[in-house]
Image (cartoon, rainbow, N blue to C red; front, top):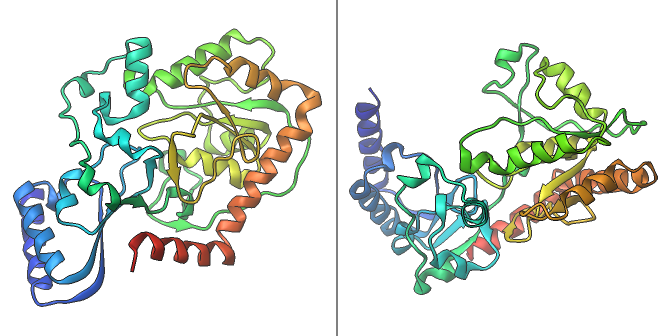
Length: 329
């Protein structure tokens, strides 16, 4: 009984906190859970604020959107995994609470029943804009543990990333296998698939053929580059699979956001294409041309080196400095 469980858990939290005092409290939030009730959320936030010097809201949503700006009145900082570079954009509403789904709605008329019935997120008020900052993205997480069973490839265990440094002549130019979700989220994914079907010169595994996980990884590692489109958010684990396995990452333009660490340097650690696909075929053709292989593999190596660096001693110290600065102790 989730309702009963959350009610008891909430009471436990309140009881624990009413006589406690802390310097900094970081409150991670993603699903509704015990904070789904707005009155309870306000009550808890007021309690936490009274009993802490700094109350930090950690928004763990997948995209730059879907923000919970209603809490800004009660918290000292609102840190998100990735934020819009131009914070003034948060003063507007977007279709599906995401700038990219809004873009495809305006440019291509893409709609989604889920988004049509969605209540828009609260707009950002000027008086709270200085509270917005960046926490850290999923690239600093450990990866999910894998098993040999395709049906149970994700476990509740985590393991450190493994880096594959041995470079060899690649069998494929490109890798692209994604799940197709709802219309607004998957429009970009479908368009990429359509364009690739039109391009006869792209040497790649069958996009639609499901294969065992081990075979999928073999295909992945035997490709020069992988396309990683947006999903529910702009950043996904496929980006970091690319860095881990030493494959050039191909992404839609990421210049609209700020994240930490900043993995996405077009032409250096990844290859980006325009949201309207105006340069998509040009970028893919460049990847496929044999004379550009060394340059593509250099981008792959740059991405992997940065990923290694941020998972090493330098990255640990840099993360602490970043978090202290964002918390503004």
